[in-house]
Amino acid sequence: MDFTALALLGVVVGILVWRAANRERGEYARFKLLRATEARQKVYRRWVIEAAITLGGLSIAVIVATWVDIPALLADAQTWPPVAAVHALLSTPVGLTVAIGVAVLVLAALVVPVLLIRNSGEEPPALGDIRALLPRARAELPYGAALSLGAGVYEELLFRLGMPALIFAVTGNAIVAFVGATVLFGLLHVYQGPVGVLFATLLGVIFAFLYLVTGSILVAIVFHALIDLRSMVLIPVALGWVRPTGVTPEPPKPPEL
Image 1 (cartoon, rainbow, N blue to C red):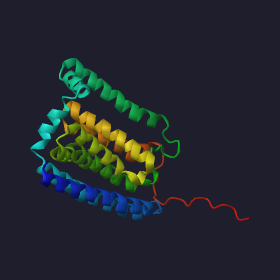
Image 2: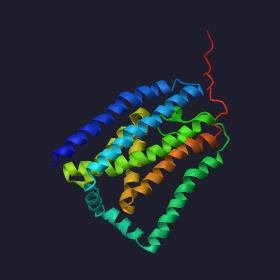
Image 3: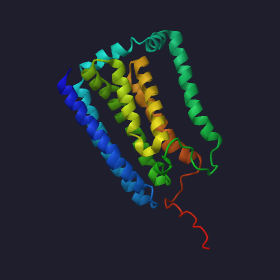
C-alpha cells in the first residue's frame, strides 16, 4: 500500500466532504432565498472562482501525484469484458461510424424535446433540487455557462482521471478505484437531495464508461459540459424561464382568514 497516496486521499476526500456538507448545503439554502439578479450574480461569481480554485486545484494536485498510475489504471480497466468489447469496436471504421451516429442521436434526444416545448413558460424539468440554481435573468446566463463548463472540466479531471488513479495507488484494484470515485462524485451532490445524488451517480457511471471505452478524458469532459449546459442555459432560455430583469416575483400569499 502506498501510504503517501493514502494520506493524500484522506486529505482530498476530507476537503470534498467538508465542501459538500458545510458550504454547498448551507450556501445553496441561502441562495434559494435570493431574488435580485445582482445578489444572485454575486454568488454565481463566487462559485465560479471557488470551483476553479478548489476543484481545479485538487485536480491538478491529484493528477500530478498519480501521473504514473493513470496509464496503468486505464490499461487494467480496459481489460474488463464490456469495456474491452466496446473499446475494440471503436477501433474499427464501422464501430467509429456507429459511435458517431449514437452521439448524434443522444445530442438530438437532449435538445429536440426542449425545443418542442419552447416558450411554454413552464417550470424547467429537474431531477433533484436544482431549479433554484438555474439562471432566471439574461445577466445570469454567462455564469450558468461558466459553471457548466467548469464542472465539465474540473469534475471530470478529478473524478474520472485523478481520484480513480489515487484510489488505485492505495488499493491496487481498478474496480474499487472507479466505483469509489463515482460514488463519491454522486454523494457530493447531496445539496440536490436523494434524487439528485442518484442521478449524479448514474451520470458518473456514464462519464466513466465513456472515458474507459474511448481512452480519452476529453470525451467525458465534452459530454459532461453539454449535459450541464442543457440544464443551465438551454432549458431556461427555451422555456422562457429567463427574464430580461432578474427579480423573481414573490410567491402568492395565502388569504387571511
